[in-house]
Image (tube, rainbow, N blue to C red; front, top):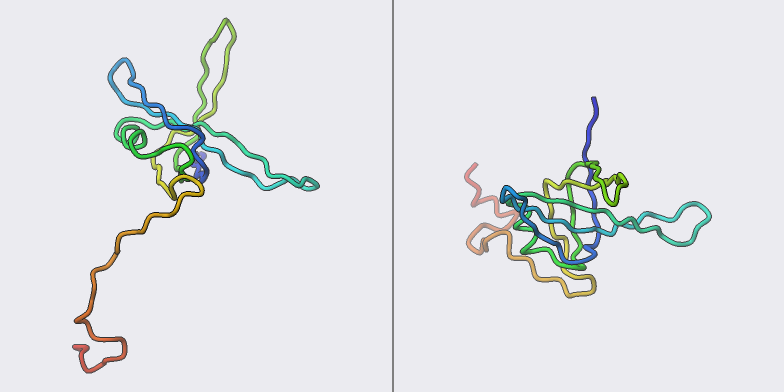
Length: 135
């Protein structure tokens, strides 16, 4: 038994590309650049470029919301597939994503303000006002 789960955080290299399968199922592909720390004795980071594939509703959402230079979190599973090109067999390793979340917009762009998560509680008793607590 094994577990095939991967989580990546990195920069989107170029705008995602959406296509339709012959059966009309949307699929969107994009590449994420993920840095690894330098190896011992090296002074520079190594960057891996990892292909990500999404399907159906997630493919449509990614295509309309994710853009080049966005920082994203991707959760999914590694998949391998092979195909033939010019008489040679080629093998591809990619991530089939189940979840894609935008962490920030383009690198260097100002962050957008998050909407308020909680309503204002102006009428609520202040911390320590035990006379207002019903127990």
